[in-house]
Image 1 (cartoon, rainbow, N blue to C red):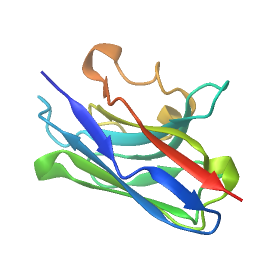
Image 2 (cartoon, rainbow, N blue to C red; image 1 turned 60 degrees about the horizontal axis):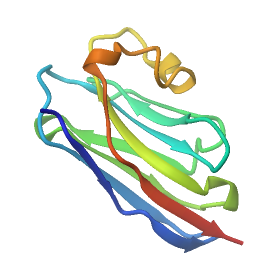
Image 3 (cartoon, rainbow, N blue to C red; image 1 turned 90 degrees about the vertical axis):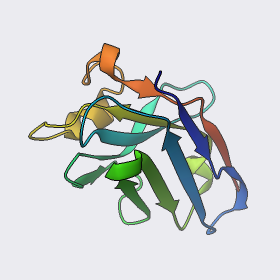
Image 4 (cartoon, rainbow, N blue to C red; image 1 turned 180 degrees about the horizontal axis):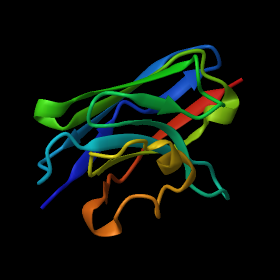
Length: 133
């Protein structure tokens, strides 16, 4: 079955950097979409960055220019390089894998649980990022 494991989170001071990694055990569809989402205490899950099967990336306004998403199709791995971190970036970061083949996956940022087919979308358990001021 599909399992995703995130790593790379931890405490960091404002202005610092972290790189998150996501490793998927398998996925039954070629060239999947992958995404990073985060959830702060008491808030809903929000999209951070998504990347489609052809490598086109889309970012939330709050992180554009500071974060970079990348992936390896052959290994179903995804990464999130986070620079110039701010205290408001604090939260649990989740990786997800979903089918590819879309004209645009921008809406996945806004609809984490409803844009992609739930039966074909898989989530990791999350990794905590804490940015101190």
